[in-house]
Amino acid sequence: MSDDLLRSRLKLWFTLLDPVDRRTYLANGLGLMALKYGVDAAGVGLVTGRFWSPLDYLLPFWFLRTAKLAGAPGWFFPALVLWTLPFLWIGVGMTLRRAVDAGRSPWLALAFFVPLLNYVVMLALSAVPTAPEPRWSAGADVPVVDARLAGALHGVAAGLAVAIPTILVNVYLLHRYSTSLFLGTPFTLGAVSAYVFNRDAPRGARATMQVVSLSLVLLAGAVLLFALEGLVCIALALPLALVIAIFGGIFGRAIALHTPGRPAHVASLVLAAPLLAGLDRARGPTVLYEVDDSVSIEAPAATVWHDVVSFSALAPPTEALFRLGIAYPRRARIEGTGPGAIRRCEFSTGTFVEPITRWEAPRRLSFDITAQPVPLRELSPYGRIEPPHLVGYFRARRGEFRLADLPGGRTLLTGSTWYELDIEPRAYWAVYAHAIVSAIHRRVLGHIKRLSEIPS
Image 1 (cartoon, rainbow, N blue to C red):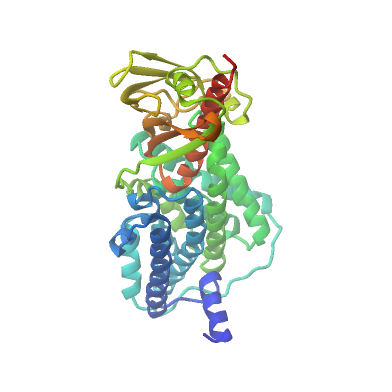
Image 2: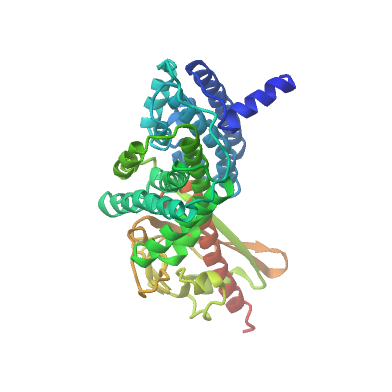
């Protein structure tokens, strides 16, 4: 590929300057899809040993749903998300310009975030010819400071008018924390606030991103103020939400600069956005995630086994993670011995009930988890609140301790937990879940180590 051709392709993909006709849209879309699939399939095969078929790839939000990613190392999920972001940008940007080139609303690009509907829109745009008078103009990029404050306030208000109903409808009416909700809401917030901010006069890109960021911060504040979420979960969601909102802001500003004079589409979007996010109702296959942690203990396995089966109260936590409200273990006790015995692990938020399934003293203790408390106490100005995601969206399924002899009379103690997530995008939240479960493991394993190494 020559330098000129490469530069023209990069300009087409990563700027919003050139119009996109149906031939360009289809050819680039198929080519980039083939590239993305090839790299993704190779990566999944290398890290999991599984074959990722084209059908797996085409499933709605496949990279966040498929069970074939189970068992991948922790770094793979965020790496896959980072690799996907440029393709997300290209897909939305080219869909936006193709819609305008076809004489349709640029807001059709938001369908890119709605599973199944996105395929329908892309196929349709690949077939519709260029309109007699395409409306993607060169636009202006001259900052205008007159009435900037009013424009910013209008932009923030418009963004919130879309985002807040979307959250309410999907979380509290449809009871779904979907990928479309998590990605589509900040993108739409950014797009609408940037569009309204630039609608009457072109503003600078920096000022536009400030309005988008302010809109997201105010949305987070509104969610906290109305006790819809707590501070911890808002803080966990913000990093990716901010990136997606800025993406949306870039596209919203481009729509305002290149296709002026059609505010009715924004009014329609305010009504349609909550329902569009709600279309993402399909649930992917259940993925059972596993987290393992180990510690070397200066004591024989028989001594360690006694402290694994049940252990005394742990000291209050010093880790910031637990002090912010994440549930942490306090003590464990057991009723009976052998398979069928009931182990109860008491956490700061309640008790895990753990029927023993394998009792191989002093080598292996396995158990199911039949009851569990909420995973955290949310920080809120109103004290204790219970957002819907605290119940049933994180489920620990089973656990296990394994003891192996080491030279010098030492023991390697390994703790494992298997859990499920029902909150999207799973790849994003699994990173946090892995870190939290691992922190719990380290607290328990460290306590057992201290108990077992006390001289008798």
